[in-house]
Length: 213
Image 1 (cartoon, rainbow, N blue to C red):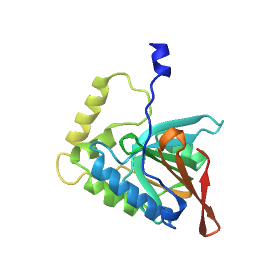
Image 2 (cartoon, rainbow, N blue to C red; image 1 turned 135 degrees about the horizontal axis):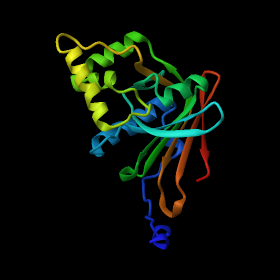
Image 3 (tube, one colour; image 1 turned 45 degrees about the horizontal axis):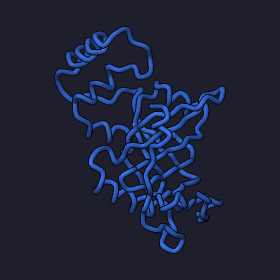
């Protein structure tokens, strides 16, 4: 079985992705690729790997969901007491990676994360199902818990507490926006000669360059 792992491979035969056919703005390029992913990927096309670093330099990754983007950056929501949030507080440098194997495409984003406004977090929280709102209150994300039963009991407590009226956003829950300074678009190509186009922010302009695969 260990030897079989080394033999797992496939050929990538994606369409050419060249400097001549990229958008000058990486957000526009992201929008084009993301729209294709939403159309073609059946489950979680907005899933992205978020990498953060602890105060002592230990990197950590996890999957979060993109919940909005525009020319300012990429937004996700979480518990502000979670491990990821604490790491962002000590080091705002983060990265995001979208990987869509069916499309033979990957997007890697580097930048800084900062909290969105309370008003923006409130607006998004109101769109969530009540079950998700209650879970945000019940879960002390990233903290040890004695059992599944304890977690479910906390949820029942929240159901009783908020059994009437609107469920408010917890003060410890909200969004982050990742403001990019680099964005790399990877397109799988034949013979592992993949296309890699990187945008780098230089002052207020984006510089476009090709990277070796």
